[in-house]
Length: 361
Image (tube, rainbow, N blue to C red; front, top):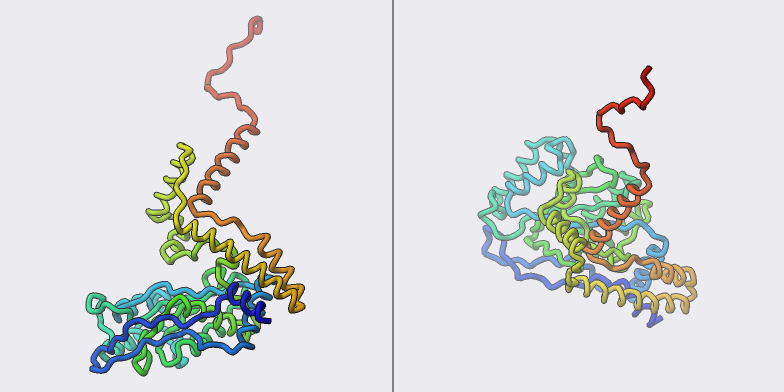
């Protein structure tokens, strides 16, 4: 049992309490406040064992993975208001607050922003503040997931995770994957401030997966390294540039570098991050093998075999540059192949052929 728990938590590290940043006093008050650590308290041994078991079983079953991402933050009521206009589609999409109030027009949003500004703890303009006063968060699931279940699970997630904070929620249904936007006020009603770290984001993902499970949707929350995902999720800027089919400037530069490598034959030096990713992959495979063996010892043959198959099928670790070079070479090869198989056409000169000798009488 000890080996099972040890290797299970190496493969699925439990969220740990992140280091709190320096406490900052509320605006307009003489006292000081503490940052609010969002990480879950230490679990019991039984709970820890059940956690790794559930994560492993869902991993081998290819359960859909939740996505929880902080997409940005705001330092003033003006910026918060602008973000609320965005997620509400300028009033076309209803906003829901933490107490269940439904806002369907800009005037209602402006009234709440005026209240926040008048309270004195959030300035009206960005240049008046250096700290984050609200966090923009997105929760989403893959396409074909029940949208009502996602919305209800997201609401339950926020009620538990952001207890004591004011927040706004907007559900978007104009894209294939169901997703919900949140705008959460950094300070709660006691003056404690959100200070989300990497460990907190993992805890948020696991909490969202639990809420989805409660609403009848199977979901998982494993690290991308365990799933074999080499790249971080796209940023908002990348997502919108792809949607508009207008690549960002740095993406154009990277494509130029890929073309240069193909033309010159000189490969780029491996980035330290890629070297680290390859080392992490080896650690993941090692931990997975040990945990599979421990699962077999526990009598869970199905999970053990599933983990072995999962490890075998992990895609190779490669940088985006390497993937881009391979894609360009593949496209070039396919283009040459098509050209070879196309029938040769007689060039059209526009000049009529002269009649053959003896044709005229």
